[in-house]
Every structure is written in C-alpha cells, then in structure tokens.
Image (cartoon, rainbow, N blue to C red; front, side, top):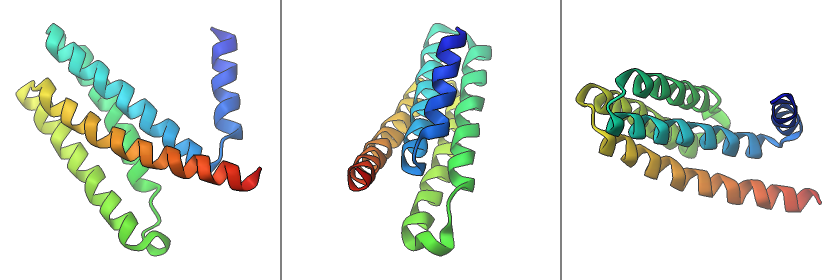
Length: 126
C-alpha cells in the first residue's frame, strides 16, 4: 500500500494545474458512484460518507475558481458546482441513487473537457 500511496503523492506533486482538476473530478465521480451503489445496496451510512467526500471535492473545485480571471466560464462553473451540491443533498435526503447518477453524468462531461485542456497544455509544453 505504501508504494501506491507514494505513487499517488508523486502524481499530485508533479501534475499540472489542469491535470489536478481532472484528478479532483476523478475523485468526486468515484465517490459519487460509490454513494449511488451504497444507496442501491441499502447502506445509508456508507452512502452518506461517500457523498460527503464527493461534496468536499466539489467544494474544493468551487473554491479554486478565480472568477475575476475566469470571467463567465468561472461563474458558470460555480453555478454548476452549486447545482451539483444541491442535487446530491436532495438525492441523499430522498435516498435517490438516480439523482446521484445525474451528477456523475454532469461531472463526467466536465471532466472530459478538462482532460482535453490538460492534454493540450501538456502537448504545448512538450
């Protein structure tokens, strides 16, 4: 397990800002999928834990936005992140895994866009 943790730490420390955003999306999506699975399996404690972890990542994505430099794009991302948080809260209260799945779909689309930006940025540096 130590090798895996060291690799993960190295990946974070050497990643570009764009790649870090992709990693955050990956984490949020993974926790949301786990939450939806836990809801379907009837383990609400695990679902709540995974939703809390996903929401912490979404909060971090939101806090990292620079609205002054990012302009309208940053403002729209902020609205999307707030929508995601509200939607996961509603899904948690209603115990609705389909609501969580909808957030996964939205974040997955954003993740793909960020992955393209990260790839283009890496290609420009190389």
